[in-house]
Amino acid sequence: MIDREPEPAASTLFCLTCRTVLARGQRCDEDSDHQVRDIGSEPGRSDALAAAWRRVKPEPLLATQTIVLISVLAAVPAAFFGVTLVPADTPWQAADELHLTYFCFAGALAFTAVLLVGQAISKWPRAVRIEPAGSYVGLGLSREGLVGTVALVDGDDGAPGDDHRPVANQVELCLDGDSAVTLRDGRSETFEVHLDDGRVLEVPAGPVRLDAPRARWERIGDGEARLAAAKHGGIDNPHDVGRPEVDPFPFESAFHIEIRLGDRLQVVGQTEAIMEDVDAEGSYRSAPGRRLRPRGVPRLRLLRRGAP
Ligand SMILES: [Zn+2]
Image (tube, rainbow, N blue to C red; front, side):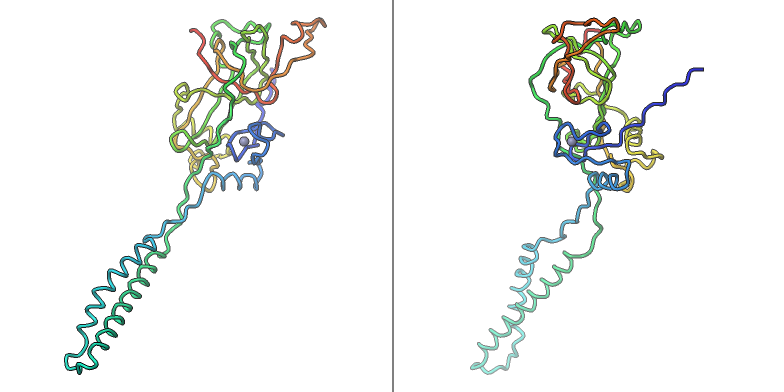
């Protein structure tokens, strides 16, 4: 009986700034100033929940200007009504002064009363809303880069029918249409990109950052997206997905993209030459300088699907 190696546990290192799942021990490859947390730990998880759900104070029911305007509108008729309260038998010598006093007093009374009632209504305690919050920090992928075709690793013949097998994929959970992201996770297996200039880029298995126009992404269903959120969030019960107390990856929509053998790619990240490339017999498998590898996490843009 063959013991299968257990699948390595998903990394719990997560960038709060661009919401990207990172490999263990990584700073964020997008920007080293980004805030990275281990959401497998209680403090890290609590920070991720705080980033994913914001408390929104309710707007005042009445704006201050509105309250003042209503108070003035109430004061004017009240002031004129006050004048009518001056006793009819007031001697004419005192009437003018008394009219003015009643006018001002009634107007001021009405103004103050309406102002206080308006302020009380405005400050009436209402529940703080809790809303999901994504990140608008995208992958800052350059528009420049080497172009090539996705291929199997040199020497790996693959299985028949594998011509367009996926070799890398990325999932994004989104809010606000698709413009804010709450979870971005890109993974690749080992593959090569045969560059148009004759060189070969070796992409190792591990994290990868993929870019493509959204129209090329496949929308994934609610169930699958919930599973992705539960897996990365360490949520045992999928019904808890979407609950502010436990789910760091709220979403409204979810997208998925695959890179397959034969696809045309642009390598937008930095690369470096592989200096030693020796095969089992001890000889160079390819001329030095012909083989490259990504510097850091591979950053790739899908240009075109391979011919079917
Ligand atoms: Zn980041």
